[in-house]
Every structure is written in C-alpha cells, then in structure tokens.
Amino acid sequence: MNVYFQELAEGKIDFAGQQLADQISRVVLIAATIISFIVGFALQSLRATFGIFGASTLLLAFVVIPPWPMFNRNPVKWLSNVDHGKVE
Image (tube, rainbow, N blue to C red; front, side, top):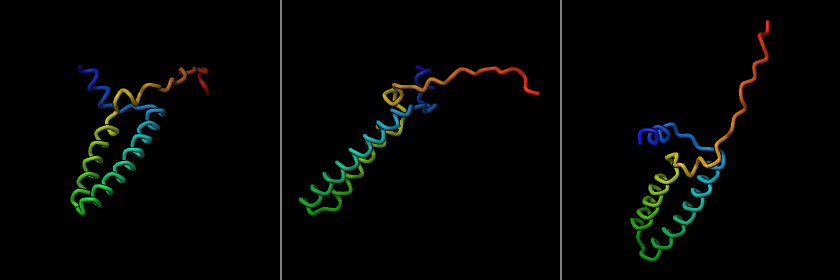
C-alpha cells in the first residue's frame, strides 16, 4: 500500500497518458458547458448553470489531476548510459 502512495505522489504519467487526460478534459468540459447552458436556460437560473458547470469541473479535476495508473500504461524506456571512457 505504501508503494502505491509513493508512486501516486511522484506524479509520473507518460505521453500517451497526457494525451488521454487532455482528451478527457476537452470532452467533459465541452459536454458540461452544453448541458449546464441547456439546464440553466430551461430553468432560467444562473445558479443552476454555474452549479452544474462547477460540479463537473471539480469532478473532472479529481479524474485528471492525480497521476492514476491509467495515465502510465506506456512508460518511456530510456536508453542505458554509455561510458565512452575518460575525456581529457
């Protein structure tokens, strides 16, 4: 359990994970904007509009900000260090 929290605290995600987080953010923000506008317009309530949009933004932040394991499925494999000898 301690190893899991240590990996979560390090915040490592790969490039494919960054792209996935970006896609999720775009889709959810666009959908939340449309839904909150429609509901707010139907109810004639700015409180409903901003409430729905704010709640969806907080939920989105909970999903994409932490480095969940789904964002690190394709870790970068670095090349090993090559020793060329001493350079004088």
